[in-house]
Image (cartoon, rainbow, N blue to C red; front, top):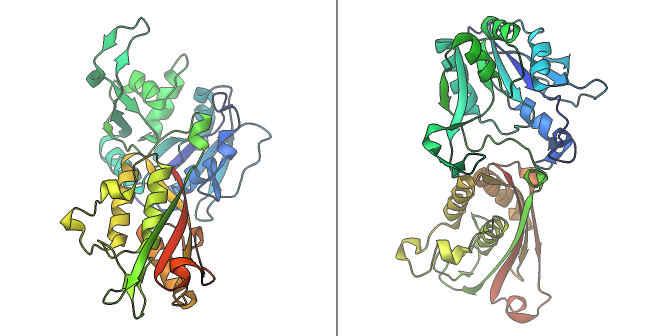
Length: 363
């Protein structure tokens, strides 16, 4: 057992019927490899101070595999969220507890550590965000959105207090802060994260895909840079920036998948600040643009078309460079190279081009 002073059990509420999603959303695969439930649970694997993870599941539903760094317990799911949490609380042994929706697969580590610190100091911590949409009542009367907050999970409490709160509460509740407030008359709210979204509707599970293409002429006196890697060659790609056509294709594919304008809109060649710019840094800027919209690149596939030079020996460096830039596993990046069979500008050794396909998921 972890002897950390901030010792937490984690409750994962996974007993719902996914009626609005139209399918069992917790079993849906995201990021190309993990289900929603696996990702929600494994988000706690690298935290110091986690005692056990207690998952409230319907009877007969199989448990998938999780990180071997976690001690997993199972509790019976109830007919309501309220009953599922009560069943899970009966298995808690740590002084603190984090109660998290299994349909929230993207809680950030900084947020989780902040919640743990705040709970140890103040007895509770509940993440929330200001509303951005206009708010009206059911009678279509405008309301002041500044007076409202959207509440997220995990919601964190002293175990003894939240157990007492659930024992004393009567009725139903859609979250734990409601139950706790009725008991303690006080909840410590902290800023949440926009990326900590709940999977609710079918479109929340659909990955976004986009394609991009770029071509640049070769000329002497220029460096040849592809996927952020400088390649020794007698010529380099001509352009306003470093003319890395492979990275430009990835950028355009990502922006297209997000429904945004192309790189010429964001990084125009009429702007001297992008003169000889490192395209990998511009790709990082694209990642920031995506993050502002709650998206990130999960997979990228690139095909480079060049008659010369031969690129096979540089593939690993290219993949590792993009892996570091995109913060995704190297196995989620594929790069291939082919010639143009001596046809056209590329076949004559006068240009290099690249196609890219990118998949985006919720950040």
